[in-house]
Amino acid sequence: MSMTRPVLFLIGVVAMACAPKEGAGVAPQKRVPQVVVETLVRTDADLSRAYLVTLVPGEQAGVVSRASGYVLAWDVDRGDAVRKGQRLAVIEAGDLTDQQNQAAARLAAAQAALAQARQNAARAKRLIAENYVAQAEVDTATTAERLAEADVAAARAAVQATLTHLGYTEVVAPFDGFVLQRAVEVGTLVGPGGPALFTLGSISRVRAVAAVPQPDVPRLAVGAPVTLTVEGLPGSFVGTVARFAPVLATATRTMDVELAFENPDQALKPGMFGRATLVVDRVQGALLVPPRAMTRRDGRAQAFVVRDGKAVRVDLELGRTLPDGRAEALGGVSEGDVLIVAGRELVNDGLPVTTTPGSAD
Image (cartoon, rainbow, N blue to C red):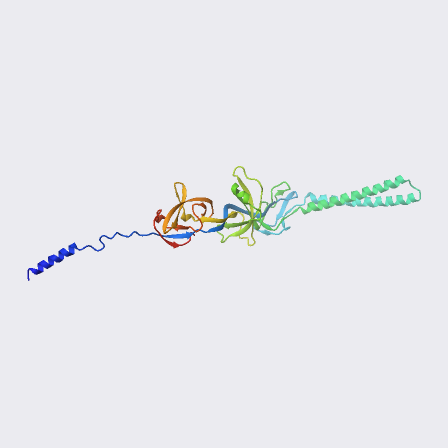
């Protein structure tokens, strides 16, 4: 019995040593990468461009004095709201009052002369009827009456002119808006050829000028919609292309395009910096490849599509690029192709893949 147990133990050890190990001779399975795919379909999209712009008032004018003299008073200051016709400043009348008095005196004299001329003309007509005067005297009296009437008209016009000039001593607002700048003090000597007393602006509508490059010019149209975004203001503002001159700047090859935006709540302020986006073209029925699906190799644009469960590398022929980075595919892929939009860094040409539907956005 003592010899049997060691023999059995030795046989067991040998049997265990000779037994094959678990998994021996079985090749390990390769992991199949999982990718996110999107099926290419033809779609329409707007091709837009964004331009940096600075806002200016819808209307802006420097208000000068049409009368010469010293400033007696100013009624408004920077930031004040004004209405059309509202008085801004008062200029001393000076010699204008004397000129008005002189014109009134000349009018009175002319009216008296006219009355005398009319009496003379009437007397001459009565006398000629009785053959007491010659026809020449009647003609002279009639001519004198007409000249007197002309003198009265001229004197009356002179009086009206002095009244108009006296009205210029009140500087008034040409439109509704705000005072952007006051550049006058009491006692300042002003006149028609002098600098502006006030700068006024209306911001119920604001304008901006975009420098549009030459390739986008042919697609511009007055009335086309424009979207404006301004840093610090929520949302966006919709405007239109107001006007543009049919000429480009030779130095930059750009065209200045004026944009207009309604501003009823006055959220937009002149001087603000913004980004104006215009739709300059529209692609129709295009195959748009998202940027995450594309790569460049040896100067060529490439992407991966899934065919028969395998990743296949294709060379792309690209057209226009949209602002969001999507590119128009003119060749290399077709409608219905399954495009790898995420996980392309995990695959090689011909490698089996598993797919998950997704989006390139």
